[in-house]
Amino acid sequence: MNTRTRRVGLASLAALSIAALSGCAGAAATGAAPAAGLAQLDDDQKVEITFESYNLSNAGIWSDTINSLLDEFMTEHPNITVVGQPSDSASGTAASVQKQVLAGDPPDVAQLTFNELDFAATTLGAQNLTALVGEDGLDEEFGGEYPYHERARTLADWDGQTYGLPYVFSTPILWIDEAKFEAAGLDPATVDLSTWDAVASAAEQITASTGAPSMSVTCVVTGGSWCMQGLFRSNDAQVLSDDRSTIEFGSDSAIDTVQVFRDMYDDGILTNEDSTSQYEAFAQGKTAIHVNTSALQGAFMQGSQAGGWTLDARPLPAFDDQPVVPTNSGSFLAMFASDPAKQAAAWELMQWMTSPRAYELISTEIGYLPLRTTLTEEGGPLYDWVEKNPLVKPNLAQLDDLEPWVSYPGDSYAQVDQVLATAIEESIFYGADAKDAMTDAADRAQELIK
Image (cartoon, rainbow, N blue to C red):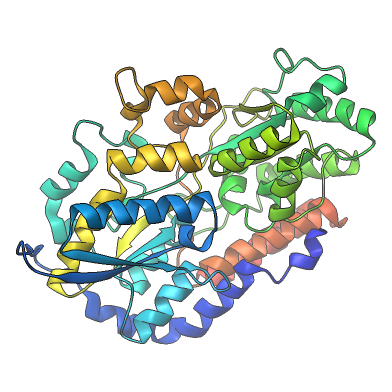
């Protein structure tokens, strides 16, 4: 599918929904001030809470795994009933939650993506967990026998306070179909895929043998902003200044990053498809190289088994000799409950969904990173699984160099992402001059964050 047909996609709809509602959200959010402390539930006190999750919107391994965890939680907490609520896929989670906030009935816990962190903390009314459960409560949550990785622990912190529990995410992975490499005369075990130049060289050889573009990169199309930020950072560029006041994706380094993929497209090795079509094509064995989240590991394993080809995973390539700086996809759990009993129940659920048991299922069934990475060390419950499933190792290794997915300031964060995505697509696929498109996009985005 041509990406131009997807121009008014999910991100645009989410942006429009948020823009339409943002004028009165602040007033609604003021009623959700952090409580002085967390209440304790009596043993026989019955509480019902709602958990909104975009994973529940995805059929198969995603929703099955989350529903299984919710069932286990309710078995262990018979006084707490959790109603799983899929996010509205048309508007996005933040817009869905905001509509419910304005209606006076928000979900008690919601799974939000990291680009929504600023909005959640400043406008949407997410509870300040530092104030609600205290530093000791957070230390207990992030510690224990299998503590959070140090780079994961603070990903949902805002202005020195914790507004969510980092939940599920991954780093960008270079997925390959070994059969297509072999058919083109390349040995998957020895081929160099450490830099983008090397990847392009391999893709050229595969394309010559198949007669079709052999590589797809979801970072460069709408919906891939989390991944594109990693590409920018790996080429000494960034999307936002450190003081969060200036859009910087119009820089020379950012323009050069986009031009690298424009050259690949002009050379006939890069496909022009939306993100869904990209990963479906790779899973069906139609392309040889694909950059996407590790959360698709399970789907790709199923595809390779059905198609009789071998799947492998590599780290994100480098731009020449510059260090690779992966950014994370994924989400955090935010609390919107204001009733003390529901807050207590919501905190129990949030701890369960980020527990060692939860990551055992989330990692093995879906493919997300276990944020409690010591689970994968020798003696941990995921050690044998990792040894039998080495596809997860590049993802784990990249966590050590992780930089967070940047959320833009203000209520127009989704529109900024769309402005950037459009400029990237126009530059790579539709003949626009990369310098002109990216600098113009940066200027327009700057107006949106003022």
